[in-house]
Image: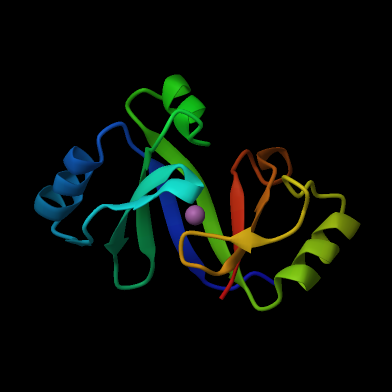
Length: 134
Ligand code: CO
């Protein structure tokens, strides 16, 4: 059911410093920071030949990644995003398998303006999973 790895998301305390690490130290192509107030994050996209890395910095007091950063002050891997062809079919299959879909289970538009859902880490080897309809 799952297809390509769309991205790995890393929450960081300082997106400028993290961008410099990826651009200079690792030699990657890095976008300019893009504030997404509706998602409570500022995002930078690191383009790799086979996938993307998303660097996420909390934006605003109600950022969904602020607590993650409190628990992981140096930053850390936050989620993996897998592509699916049909997000509703994927959701229904996962629910039938007993997996917990976060929120109300209705897809919302993610950072790439594509429908996304999140799956509880307890069902997936301790890893928060995002599904994106590619
Ligand atoms: Co993501």
